[in-house]
Amino acid sequence: MWTRAELKQNAKGVLSKNYWTAFLVCLVYGILSGGMGGGASSANTTVTRQITSASGNIDPEVVTAIVSMMLVIMGIAMITGLALSFFVSGPMNVGKNRYFMESRAAGSSFGRLFYGFKVNYMGNAGSMFVTNLFIGLWTLLLIIPGIIKQLEWSQVPYLLAENPNLTGARARQISSAMTEGEKWEIFVLQLSFIGWNLLGNLACGIGVLFVTPYVEATYAELYAKLRDKALTNGYATMEELPGIIA
Image (cartoon, rainbow, N blue to C red; front, top):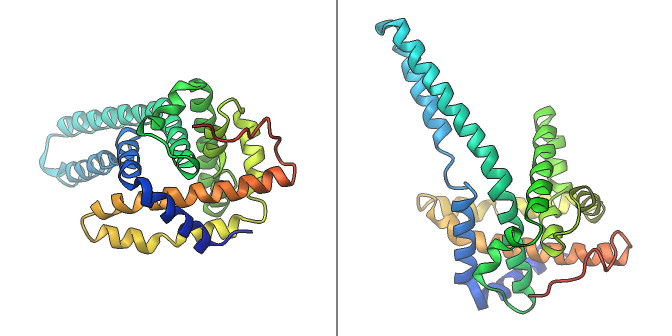
């Protein structure tokens, strides 16, 4: 059994030794995985609306040409986003989690952020992409089932960080077992950081960057608790979860 207070207290203890390295890991992860560059599509939408509203004063052929160009740009952006998600975001998520998991035990280094590229890269990329795709599809059907699936498979990147040779299907299976009966508490844990994020947004969003290491360290503590549960209840074997060797 675990409590939010316990996880957060442990996370603070870990960060007291390596906060600035953890900060750099989160910052670089956010930049390289595309987490800080989501303004393009909204900008395209704004431009398209302005063109549409002014269409009465512009040659229809010009409007058609401009809108077609914007659609092409948005299509390229979508394809680029999917490629980024597959080839970069997924493996980097695995590496980020590897860093925080190692930090709990004996410390880690910034280079661990790229762990997902070094060990079974295509396996990590494929497993994370398919998992996120399934979650996205569930969310498209109905919001609530999508949230439930996100909680159910929230431990997949941690499982892959511990054992990159797990298949995506097996990682999802283990994650489902680990989070059985825990989803509500995990959801409340996620909600508990809303106040920190709102506070961080008061400084033009920059403050969120300083909160992120605390959030990530807390989630690593959660994984450690759920991992113990998985081994104790036989959801996974020691061969599947061999531990973290920095």
